Length: 169
Image (cartoon, rainbow, N blue to C red; front, side, top):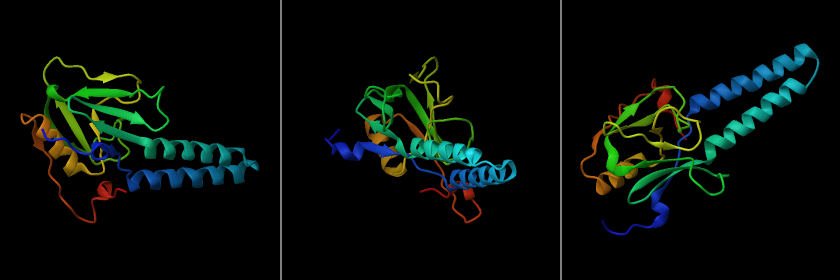
């Protein structure tokens, strides 16, 4: 494999417009609750939660090395990844719109399947399934395929304005 620029190996996560709409609705709910209760405390609690979730979504990124995919949050845990997947254990990558918790801030995700018996390393119990959502998805998949040519990639991209789960930033 030819040596690539290190920056091209860092992929930040996409952020879904659907999540932004949900957070906007929560902000409105906090404002309504604060009007009913006569206190601004619920509004500020909702604002704080939204700011924290937004920061968490925007700070998630993946680093692709020659052997592993590392999951990082910007603030880091002592500079260590929160999870990793060995590329040699990956058998296939498929498109998923599963809303279950994952290390992705978008509903348009890549679900990673492994060899039988492989357990992926997760240092924080934040995600249940190995699903990721890199911004430069095609480049990410090409780099994965370069490292391990045995990976089957089954990613179909249907487009249309009605597919609101594809509205990503």
